View 1 (tube, rainbow, N blue to C red):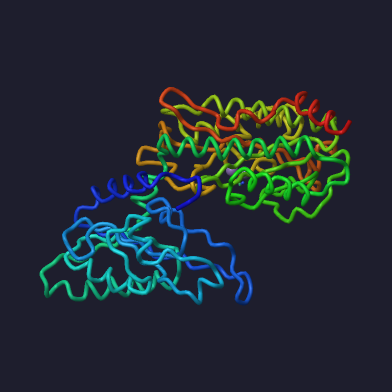
View 2: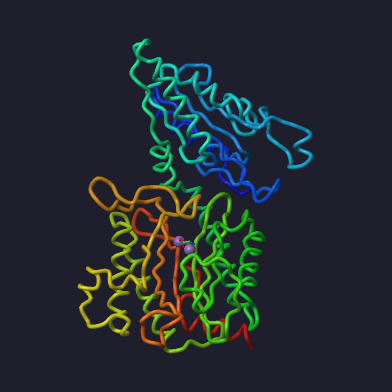
Length: 442
Ligand code: GLY
Ligand code: MN
Ligand code: MN
């Protein structure tokens, strides 16, 4: 069970909720295989988030949920069997007994028996919710299995089995965070905020982007995280104009801004925050103007996070401020803000959306639109608010803005009557950041 993660009771309640929705359907999640780093060396295993959401199990496994009366009724786990030889090399396995006793499985079988038991469970079932995309091998075996099952249906008089992506059920559940999940995300965010503040306080001339990366990731682990929730972006100067820069091999110059996008995973829940600050205690006029613009855009966007609003409204709020500012600062010609919004003329400097869902995955599951249009925000959803401006060194912008990348990213929980900024403790005010940097450098 994930250290610091949800309680065993939560996993049981989630399964019960799902079982109550299944009726005569079957849900099957195949295993995510270990990813090979080289030869016989593997990356640290990270289970698929749906599997972990329903079980807390962190070894390769398949899960099946069946509500109908049959041999595999309830919650079935297909896990690696105990094996002293393998366990000597790679650590303890829960095995079949552990699956039942620690993880609450009603039925536990060897990993290899998944397909056979699923085929049995499908006799009489009308619908299969299957977890696509975990492995190409499982996906094609599944399509064969459905073909086989349906080939026999005309003789049995049963309607054909209909195949659905399990994300139809899982994503909706995961999109709305329980109080316990919100508390885990508060913790995850608090650890990330402290790690960012520590960088502000520790960074010295000569430190490299990889020093910054190592510093935040050390603090994630010290704080109880399993590690970073995504590849840390520690980008100085022009490197910050690359949205997902992760090589982190440069060394900030004295006059550079540093963009740090880093968050850890605590109890299975991600933080995703970005701060931008000067290597020295001072800002050039161009840096200050762009920073203040992004901060104003972020504040405007944050004010839109409330029930009934949408990720789209949050984005439009940020965009309105950014595009007006781009005209005021001469990044965009003329003064026709509406025309620039319409034509997308701002996109060389702001090319991403302002928000994404956040949860067990950094880019978490859940749809952004429903049949009516942009999906209304509702209590329990968590999203990022992350406007930015990126002026590449080789851009057409006025010279003084070139080579500056700025993003400000907070994580926000939608509440019944508004929102809670889970990362509000990050210093955002430019003068406050300068004070911290000055104290650090003195
Ligand atoms: N850290 C990736 C993102 O902000 O979406
Ligand atoms: Mn993000
Ligand atoms: Mn981020």
